[in-house]
Length: 343
Image 1 (tube, rainbow, N blue to C red):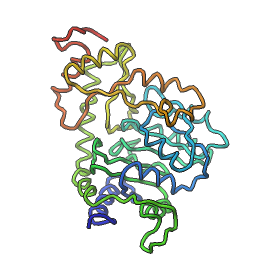
Image 2: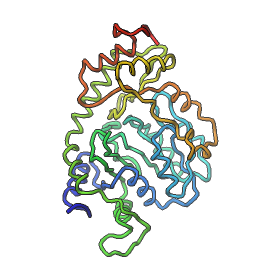
Image 3: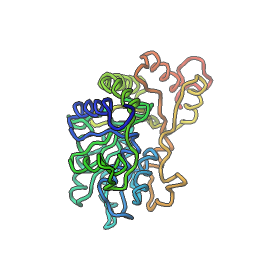
Image 4: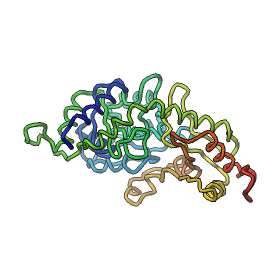
C-alpha cells in the first residue's frame, strides 16, 4: 500500500492524537493542503475577509485566497512577533468572517485573548501552527485550541515526513468533512459530496513521519537549551532583542529570530564570512507582489520587525561550542574579524 490511508498514515495520526491529546487529528499531503482544506471545511462565505498576520510564510495567505476569501492584514506585537490581539479587535468589521493567526517560529500566540475576540464576534479562529508541533500554551499542547490548526512536517520541521501535514480541530463535524475533502470530496462511495482534491499523505512520507514524531520532546528540549544559551551568551542590549515567549508557554523554536536594531548588515557580513548561514525571515506578506493589493492600513510594527530580524542557526544536533562560536561572531569577539565590537 503506497497511499489511500494505509497503515503508516493511520499510525502517524494515532501518534499525533496521543501526543497532542486531541482525537481529531488527520494527516494530509502538506501543511498547505491541510490549511486550504481545513478552511474549506468551515464553509465560510466567499469574498469575506480573514484577519491575518502579515508576518508569516506565504502559505497562510495563499490558503485564504484559494478559498475565495480576502486577507485583511493586521499588525503584530513586536515582542512576540505574533498577531497583536489589540490590533485584531480594532480591525474587525462586518465583512470579517475569520481570524487567522500564526505561531511564529513555534512561539504560541496570545490564544486566550484571540479566543475571547473570536467568541465575542462569533468568528472561527484558525491557527497556522506549521512551526508549532511540540509547542505548549499554559500547560496544553498547541493543536487543542483552534477551530482549525495546521502543522507542517516538511523537511525543515522538528517532525518531518519529507513532505506532509496535520490538521487538528475541536469539532468532530469538521474532521468528517475534511476526510472527504482530502479524498476528492468522497469517502468510500466515489460520489463527491464536496469539491475536494487529492490531499492524502503517501505511505512513504507517513512512514518517515512515524520515525521522527516520537523524538519531538527531545528535539524541543534541545532547541530550548540552544535558545537559552543564545540569550545568556548574547544578552539583550539597546540594539539586540529576543522574541518574547510567555513564561507559561513553550516554543518549539523551529527558528531562532533576533531583532538587531543597529548594525544588522554588519552582523550578517561577519557570519557569512565564517560560513554561518542566516536568514531575514519572513518577508512580510503585504510586501509580496501577489498580496500587496490587500494592504489597507499601516503595518509599522511588522515593517520595523522585518527591518531588524535575523534568524541565527538552530538545529537539534547543534553543539554548545557551535552556539558559542555563532555568538562570538555576532558580537565581533571571534578574534579574527576586522568588524570587531558591537554592531
